[in-house]
Every structure is written in structure tokens, then in C-alpha cells.
Length: 398
Ligand code: PMP
Image (cartoon, rainbow, N blue to C red; front, side, top):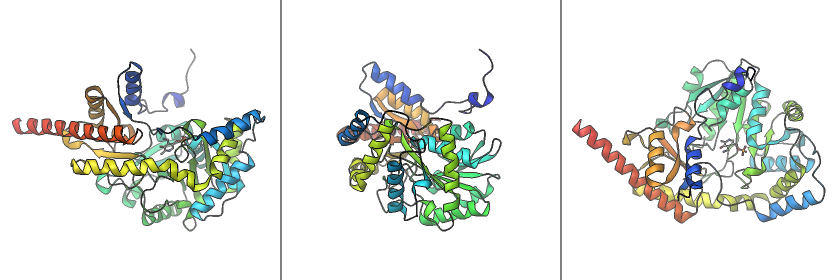
């Protein structure tokens, strides 16, 4: 084989891509082992049959050729309408480009913001693909730590210490921590980007999973519309992870360039998928509430179990995840997750999959039915105290 590019070889920084435990638990399940899978953010509920019917009707109706590259007018308008309703910011078709999931929107946003060699900031803990997505553009990915002691909220002091950069990527509600940035925090972050004339890239794929208060988008803050790029998708809000329907929202000129990028990458999303996405959005918040309801309920139930069992949980009122601090077991998140999987057949994500700041934590996805989840939460609590006890015994005898 001839030479591979440095960029493709270093996409994940040379280390793990963060999905090791997930792959291991899938392999165990394939061998017939009764693993309770709480790793990735995949709903236990499948895409609504009415959405699938819209997909089928569109495909059999002939929408199977090359589709409009920026997205169909209907879907772009439906996304714009949803954003106006959720944030109050004027948003029109020309502010929206349809992408292959929020993931492709994140890549497009960084392609818009950064030249090769520029620096792009992101907050650690982070969704596992972030640094690789930034590196794919040729930019340098630099993490700004949000500390566990501050509920994983980034501090302005830490941001101000970061090197000069073209963009800052934030994610509220946050995966993996469940943190939601307050209005004040978003104001501070917005001011930081204004002062340095940077792009703010806001990943809002969890905008329907806020269990207290309302979702806040920094694009709605004064003066931010011209420097904010929002990545969104139907993956979490409509249980459509496999349909890969997402969007990037931003200033018209930036979106025009993202459309150009779409022409040179995926060349548009299949028309029948776009039509199903439009249908999904036409159902309005009622359907989004139905999809979010199990996670709202399970978030409360698992928090109650962990509180009763005296586990240290990252305070959160959002998302389909709960993060537990397991540092007093003396294990790393990876060691804890591996032992939990091997010994108790419960699969959770090590905090280390999401960066250095979440080391010594595990993330639990609330993605199995309530009874199985509550049982798994009890198993995790029992395992935690077992290992914390072992750590204490070692400390005493040592
Ligand atoms: N951002 C975050 C924070 C995520 O958790 C995910 C998926 N788990 C994505 C973006 C990408 O989602 P999708 O491409 O399915 O929209």
C-alpha cells in the first residue's frame, strides 16, 4: 500500500476512539450473554411507524433520485420553523442546510470556522468524536477542561487561559455529563467569543432532553446570530438515529459555503428520508415529548436509586445519561466499566471515553426499559460499594 496521509492516521490522536467497551459488550451479546447495554445513546424505542410510513410513501412515490443538495425546501422550512419556535431567533430556509446527522453538521461548522493549522477549542468532557472531527478539517483540537468540582461547567478563567483560536465548540445539554449551561454561563461564553472574534459552535442535539426549565440556545443571545453555528438533528429528539437527518443553522453566507461542502461530500440526503424528517417535524413538540418521556422518567428513577444508595452523581436535570463519580473505588472509569461488564454483565461507558476531565466517572445511558434499568442501577450501586470497600480495606491494611 502506498503512503497514508498523516491527517487520516492521526484522526483519533493515535489512541482509542472511545467505543471499546461498547464493542466488547456487543461481542458478548452476540455470544448469547445477557448483557444489559447502557453504553451508547441509542433509544430502546424505534422510529415511530407513522414516520416510517411517510418514508415508505415518499420512496414508493418516486422520491428516490438525487435529492436537492441543501435539503428539500419542506425540510429546511420545517427546521427553521422549529428553531424559531424554540429560540425566537428569526431563521429562514437560507439559514439551514440539511446534513448527515448532527455529526456532519459539526464537521461542516469546523470547515467553515477553521483553516488547516488554526486552533479549535472544545470543552472536556466531550462527545467522543469531537477532537477527530476537528482534526479532519486540518485544524488543531485543543481541550478546555470543565472540572468535576464545578459540575462540569466551563469557567471563564479556564477559557481565557486557552490559546488563541478560531472557534469554540460547546454542547448544552451536555453529553456525557448532563450539564446544562445557565443563561449567565452562556452570556459569559458568548462574550468570550465576541471579544476574540471567534465562531461559537453550539451542538444542540439534546435540545428536547431538558428535564427542568427550557433549552437555551446561545444563538438567541444578543449579537450572537452572526457568529454562532448550531448543529442539530432528529436523532435524539425523534428516535431517528439511523436516518442520519441533521442540520447546520447559521448566517446565510456561512450556510452557502456549507451547501458547497455538501455538494462535494455526501451530495445531499436521500429524498425519502428528508420527507420523513419533514413529516416528523410537522408533528410538533407533542411527538418530541413522547420520545423524551421515558428518559425524563428514568432519569428521575435512577437518580432516586443512586441517592438512596449514596452514590455520587453529577448533578444534572437533562439528557438520556447519568454520570457517576467512582473515584473512591480507586479504579479508573475504564477499569470499573470493564470489571462491571465482565463480573456483573452491565455495560456502561468509562468517563475516559469522553476526555481527561471525566476520568474516574462512568456514564450510564438510560436506554433500556424501566425495570431492567432499575435493576442495573442496583447492580451498579452494589458493585460500586463492593469496590469502594475493597479500596478502603487496601488503604487500612496498607
Ligand atoms: N453531538 C452529541 C453531543 C452527541 O451525543 C451525538 C450522538 N450521540 C452527536 C452530536 C451526533 O448525533 P447525530 O449525528 O446522530 O445527530
